[in-house]
Length: 346
Image 1 (cartoon, helix red, strand yellow):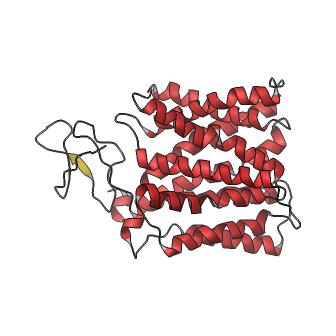
Image 2: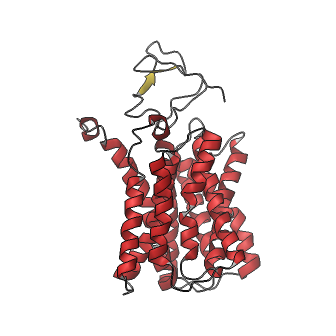
Image 3: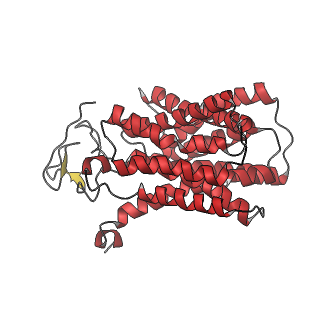
């Protein structure tokens, strides 16, 4: 018998752990960029992260978008990659001392607002408190004394957070089309984002330089582990977990970067930074706890499908019960073990 069936919380814990692997992988970007990649080429790095990863996943899945998913994939690719990455780099270049990371850590507050607006799911006081505490802890870890605030950099940082927050919530709202897995949908977004980034990188930074062996290794790591795998896990988590909970896991990225700087680069962590590390981790952990007061704010919305659509692999949870096809074999009619039949109004 599967241990996930013996322990009801096992599936939820596994979903959280797999989703957390994404921002942990992103946390290696600073180390790889500074130690392996050519300097002054952030847009090239963004392009080589998104486009090769998207094309690779597209070749593996051999699934193309259809109908309205061409437009949806283009918009999600723009929000999650094509706009987010350039805005993030602009913010990082213009804001010293890790201020850009703090602005990025404010993303859960934007996600909470969009979740209430688009998904009609209000958030508990505990999760809002966690969304406030996490940026405060990260600020203690990464913000250097006397760090200034550049208006353009602040605007770019907030726009980057809003872009990815919108992409995360729309990913949850739209789900996946019939017959398309998480890898396929991820490939569409990465390819669309990479296609948008490539001409921008060429126009701003010029032709790419000759790449050394370490640079090729660095780009390969960022494309495969830091993008293809990481974003597939991230979007998988967006399907299975409340999106505010998912966005709170993003705090693990700057914390991982700081930890790698301490372990690998010999950077120091002061007592104040260590305290901030503990605050941010505690806030992130608190945001993963089930919402006991209002279960509807913690439970992912039940997937809704047309009666003619096949059952997606991710339908169902420990709370809702596993959905299965009706035993009479009528095509596409879905029944849960409780006998609830859902029809789609999309």
